Image (cartoon, rainbow, N blue to C red):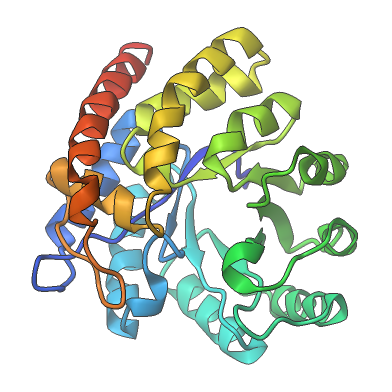
Length: 299
């Protein structure tokens, strides 16, 4: 299995009452497939994993595997703050048919680099699923350093890294780790084109929830070395990137999905997009529609 290209960190649709909207979930999955998305993440941080009951996690992953399995990779978010619990969650995802696990550094507990090495090696040695490391210090409070990633990259069951730090120096330090069995992926939409032009294998994206065809096009251009075209398309997306950061993820992207008819709610402590951003959301919807129409026309 090769994890590369435009991969969507899927939002989880809820009804206005806060229940899972499984009809909207199926429509979101089919829209991603039709647009050319090359992989999905179920129940990551964008999917509000911490707010899901076990039975809801199971339903989301089972439906995703039924809809997409065998056509594009289905990654399950399984990272928790404790190693034993992460192993248990990864076994759960494997039983439900996931292709790989996206495993964030343990949130809140702030392990040392030695602790991160031991954590990921224990998970990989268990062998339930191939593991994609996920580094997002702004959310977790700890940073998986390049030398630690390098020590993990040689493990046969560790197949990639999603790096959400946006400094070019961080990506340059990680790109030498790329190999047939290890992918380096951007986890930061605003710098994903730059990372892929530099050699990254792809991106795990929030924006591609709402512009999947355009993001597939961006990835194809950047990974194909078409720098001028990739940079031009990326420049047109920066207003969207900015909007997606006006409030904590996934509030803004779910506001846009709601306007596309896919889900309407979030779960506390997340709340709906502030009224002060409503006009901007409407403006962004028009931008999204234009980008998607052009992206679909290139397929």
